[in-house]
Length: 256
Image (cartoon, rainbow, N blue to C red; front, side, top):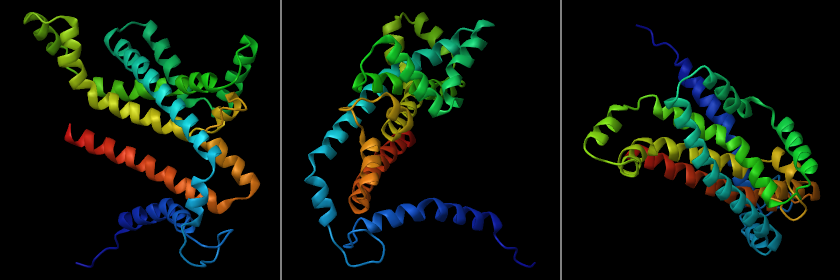
């Protein structure tokens, strides 16, 4: 029988090359001795050394971590509670609740950024890290809620009834039954919220103040100043940290 060409494999390889070739080129250029990138002039770590001498970079990193960790923690709790209520309590009114939770996933970031900016201005709330955290919570809750909802689709409520028959209170049920079963879904939702919060630019651009620039905003400012080599080094470290979080989360979920 004549061997047929492996068309799906070829398509998969083409897509992977399309995705990761620009990333590989960015990482390679971060070690290029040339000041403005381009042709290879030799291996050098000078751009990483120059990057570590800029205090404004670490100020942006600090703001990014504060916003990402705060919004992830709050949105994980609220999103998990929202998913439990949507799955456990069934009524006709819940359909409208589904729409309200699902809406931030389909709204354009530009629309959300402008609407949140107008809201904060009308309330007289000063723009800063607080407004950025509130803005990130608004869209992270939806992602966490739907990831946890997917985990709850296979949840057996007989476990709760069996625990109650054995004399367990709600505190014990939550700690010994619900959290172990929902843990992988909660962690997956938290990792997704953390990644989206670290990477967000459009919404942060509208609701951030003059002293609350996050790392994506700082990279955008460096692009306008014309510092491609330092940006390559910064993006390489940024990407390495993000990949490390994702790989750790995947290994944890696989063990679970």
